[in-house]
Image (cartoon, rainbow, N blue to C red; front, side, top):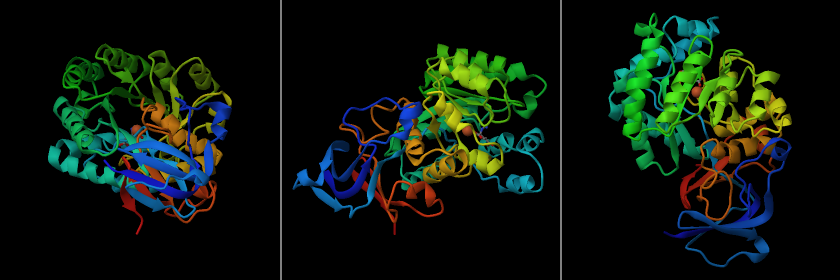
Length: 415
Ligand code: NIG
Ligand code: FE
């Protein structure tokens, strides 16, 4: 594979010579960087970087970045990009006054997505998800997690996970797969919830594990979905099959989801739109990473999570898109970073740390993604039309991603 040299980089951000696994609390306000730099990629990996005064004079290909900034690819640790159809009819129903919970109670929401997904072929699902994957790479995403959870039957959950496996095989960026069979209780199990939980535990999990289809196990632990006790049963069964928990918690209220995630050793607890001192206290005595999904809060009009309180507690905050048809129909990480700064008062440096290095840690990918460090993957993007770090979140409506490099090769260039 060829080498690629970027020269005349205005600022090279998140450049590390001593790679860190993640960054927490006060340290999140610091983003390592190098002014007036070059970056050499070789064989798909970061090879070296340094100041322009020591720029190498040869490489197979050279791009003059002309003073623009270079960032590591975003690490989007929470998405649902395998789905059959968008749900704009529910969006209009919410404009007219229905809540997300009410739509779900009436059989819409996740159950609506499940009906459509069950009727769609694996090939069609793959094509849709492949298109979304290409889309988010153009926004600069360099690693991604993808969940099942719109199947809600053995066959359809396996179908979704096989689509994710095909995406993994073809994707130029790393993908982690999460089994989310416990995303909602299907209508036919409404009066016998435990039967569905037993199906997840006794039939879905063993098959998912036997086929090696998932890296993690997720449960939507929230009011109207799965209780902490039910969540615990499923997460313990997941552990028995080698699947670490990574869960949805506290999107709809103080549901006990965060404490449940912590108790069962979750890698991350995601959403946390409702998060009090009690949840933060529970997180402090754990390795579980709190993940906020501000485009979901924005789209549903629910509270934004307490980013500042989480960072003040010296925790490693993560940001992700939650790209899905119901609560966040956007996979645009630059917009997530803008929302984090605008609505949650995160500093640009804090938001970028949360969306890169900490996102990588929330997918156990810190060794290969999340920063620009020797021997990590050469997945980076080059800014366009912005002159400072703060201009990135500030320019929330503009296309700030000029070029995307994946595995040391040009992937996309803004027209
Ligand atoms: O992360 N909250 C649960 N799951 C998704 C939304 C699913 C849907 O509405 O389709 C989320 O918000
Ligand atoms: Fe989600």
